[in-house]
Amino acid sequence: MNMNDFRKKIFLNSQYCTYYIDKGCTVLAGVMRSFGYKYAIKLPGEKLEQVNVVYRKFTTLMNCLMGAEILLFVYLFLFPNFLKLTKLPFFVMSVILCAIPLIMLYLTYISVNYLYENYLSRYVGSFQKVKFQPTIYNIEPQAYETYRKTSKKSIYVLAFMMAIFLYFVFMPMAIDIMVANGKYKLALKTSNVYSKFIPIFPDVYAQRAYAKFKLGKYEDAVKDFELANDYSLSKVFNWDILGVKTYYIPFDEMINEFDKEISIRDKKIDKQFLMAEKADYLMKNKKYNNALKIYDELIATYKKLEDTAFSPERVYFNRGRARALTGDIQGAAVDTAVSRKMCPECKFDFETKLVQKP
Image (cartoon, rainbow, N blue to C red):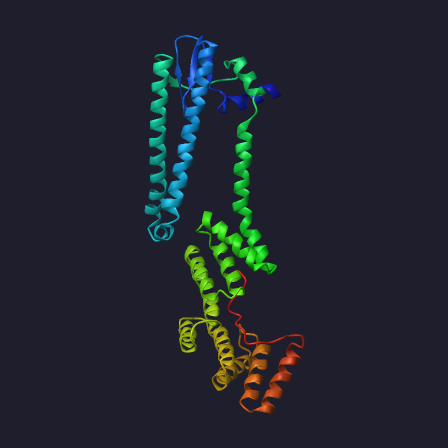
């Protein structure tokens, strides 16, 4: 196949191929192009130009209506009911998500096609409905030449759609980079815009939650972490939620939160990590004796060479602080020395390590 024939193949599959000649009879393209309308004569050029103008109006109308219906379906039904749909059986959910849009689009096609056929019968004449099957041998040379010389608006449409697609694909990565570089306000603004258009993307909610956490908007951060959990269909951000809560909920309520989370954990290593976080929280709230008991238990576990999820050097250092604040100066010096020996460059504090950058 030479290059000219290849271009003609492209022309046959484009919206610009609106008719062809079959044994001296003109066959007009249908709105959906799978079938056409055959006339007993070869239609004059003036008539074909008029039909082409109307045909493009009808195809544009149909494409606009279908696009609007899909957007309405997504934003008025799919996004608002996403979480409810995920709780349905897979088969039921698939039927709902497929049947509703297909019925909508089919009814639109039927309606637009009816109007187009009505136009053809009134302004062109009676026709025979046939399959629309043009080949490179029966297309009109004039129609092909017009196609070659006409600027391809579809290219600009495709470029615009590609730009939108790339925006929605790469923007979550851009938000991640903003958060990683400490640009929390910019990340917050960008994720706010993104979530307006795609309100079911869990990673964006998680990044926004972390940005809010760093900006001191703790309650809003918890809400976003909860949304990230919901839309990821998991509880992966439960610890982040727990960590953010240590900054604003009352002490007794927070202790209950820690105890509840520790009790539901099956793995001992998880329990120990949460106990270390609870001890640090107690230290922040000047409950030194209570924190000291937990640090003793954690260090005993470490000395047994058991697997641990907490940082032993941090626990040694913080126990040293607890001992110092409860009057055990000698014990505090020993723990501090052990900690410094284990990690000379480390800087320790009592801030939660539960909240991690997503």
